[in-house]
Image 1 (cartoon, rainbow, N blue to C red):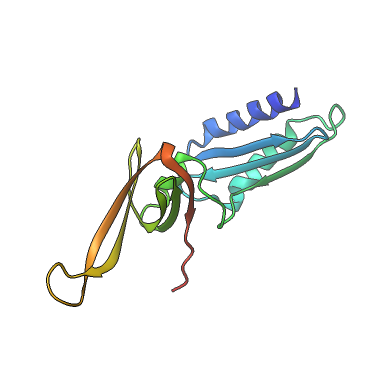
Image 2: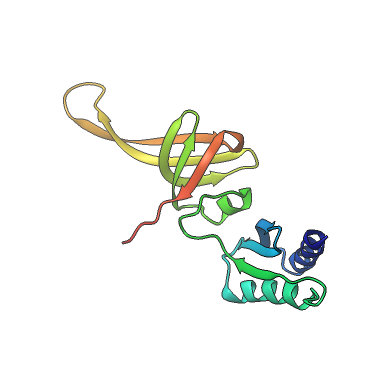
Length: 154
């Protein structure tokens, strides 16, 4: 019953801000509510506060004792929602699939999957030495086991 109330409250809030979306909504048997939100434009502290206040102010503490945690995904968390890929266009990803592990820049997001691009050094077709070649890999969403943004410090 508490879960339905919280889901309804979150849905109301998302109608007002279509850029926001829910990655996770969990409620433990002892009424610990955990909501992880993300946004197409990046999650601001005000987004977290708005979600938290909307839930907190619309639940009756007299009727249900609960604790509430509203957060955004951590920088090292895997991408779990298709909408997260769009905001990471151009960033370096490490993607695991049944075919293997790939690291490259997220060049494109389609309704079916993603395209990674990277450069590799390979032996010249003729003669000695190596040449830099541009590589790419198309990965359908259903084949992606895990995808993480690679954090780089310049």
